[in-house]
Image 1 (tube, rainbow, N blue to C red):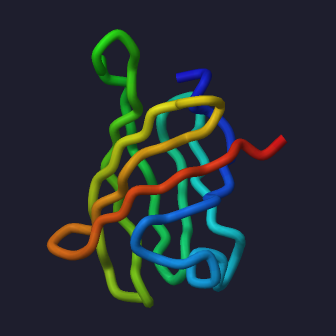
Image 2 (cartoon, rainbow, N blue to C red):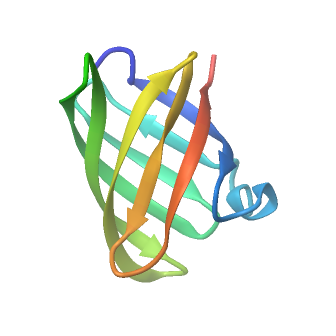
Image 3 (cartoon, one colour):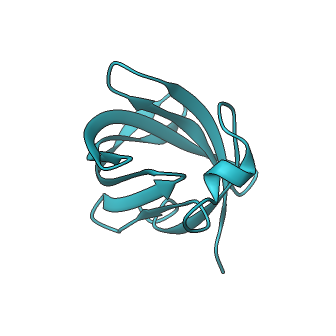
Length: 107
């Protein structure tokens, strides 16, 4: 879990522009050493429960989440890999949108 742990700033999302991503706070994903964490982009926020899973010759972080979208309850899932020191993955909102994302680790 160590390479994934920390706070990552969302630098790009496939479905939403950066103005939306940073609407309330700078968009982020925070992953703890135990696989739990939080995220927020735009008006979507949630609590993460994740695990390391084999992915080819590497591992990826796969997670479920629950939270809110414009104050309405929402949940979903997602995954992330580390590629060239960036967190890249996809987040899914249950029965709604999904988007690829790219994030850079906060120092």
